[in-house]
Length: 230
Image 1 (cartoon, rainbow, N blue to C red):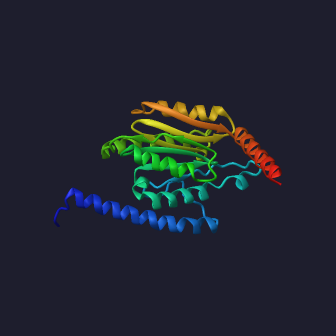
Image 2: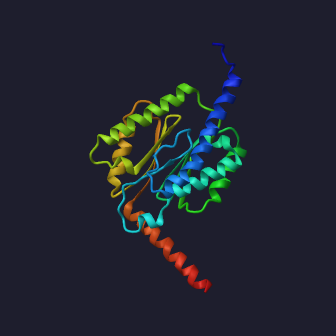
Image 3: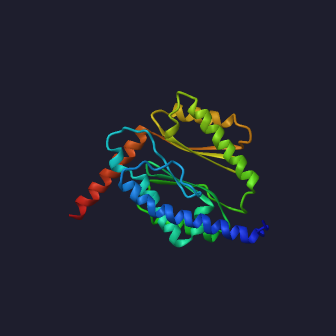
């Protein structure tokens, strides 16, 4: 079998990944409409949808993370499909976390513009960096850190691991989470700090009570604006 030069290989990989993104983007709305469970990690570095195990009243009515991700993925595919291969987008209860690397400020501004124009986002934590892409070994090292942290969380009975989304980029662990108490989030951070290779831990967290208060305030404001327009 002949060898394929690196340029041709990169072109082939991009075509395969783009095809996977297009197929998934087409299938996801159907899965959501049928009530299927959306996987926490979407193949191809596309995005992740947080599936918090929350039973707070009105949660499902107020938050549609799956629908939010569908809208974002469609917009990114139309604007610049290469972005989906370089960044990770995670949504949890309407809060968005962006991680990864883009090649220039123009790509970063494109991403920020699309996010800013997407409805249903409560808060954005943008950790996307403008720099050269990581080497395969560094990507693998970051993946190992995330895997070790998830394992530690799953074996800790005081943590509801499904309520937290973990990403690692250049040794920095990014955590997006919701839990009944702050103590649970602190346990996650402490686990992360014990893992070899971790240089920093960034936590974006809110309690269930804080989340519901934010929902109530937003709903009250919306009702007031609607009443004023009548």
